[in-house]
Amino acid sequence: MDLQEWAKENIEFVGNSNTNKSSRQGRIPEIIVDHISEGTMSSMISWFTSQDNKVSSAHFGVSKAGKIYQFVAIEDCAWANGLTSGIENATAELVLKKGKSENPNWYSVSIEHEGVWAETKGVLTPEQLKATKMLHKYIIEYVKDKYGHKIEPSRETIIGHSEIDKTQRPNCWGTVPVSGDNRLFN
Image (cartoon, rainbow, N blue to C red; front, top):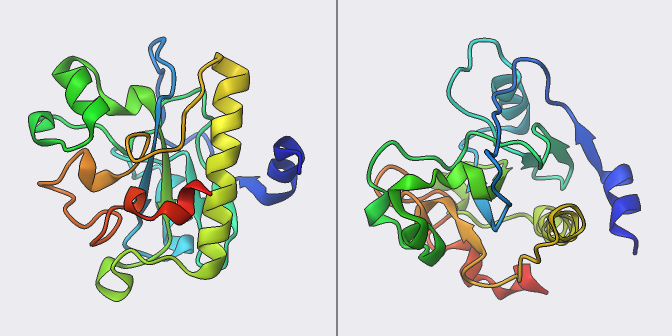
């Protein structure tokens, strides 16, 4: 399947002038970071497009039904993975390597998933899993075409938010990090 055609049919852009974003400052996306939203898809859309939100955004959101929404263009920096302190406690190899001088938002693409950790422990619905796998493939192809960089799907390049910020986000993806689920790489 042509991933560009798939994206046209399956990704709905819903970001607006209130959606937080900034420049990548010349950086290339090198990792995909998966999150759990701690809420419904409608609350995610409302928050990421609200003039009252001055702190967060994501590139994509995936509903429990498998519907994909885009808030921020991949060329831009979404506000989902940055840290103001504590980056030395990250467990993701690339994040540790880049250190404090590199905000993880600059080199990541973020995906929020509708859900509440206390209810799901980060387990996706079958529809979310299918949509997320396709979205990962699309992001990987997009980054290769746009930047000439191939994100090799692996434990080091597809991570949970807790692998960047285990202190403030210990359950952001789930009990087992997303990248531990090899189904996301197939």
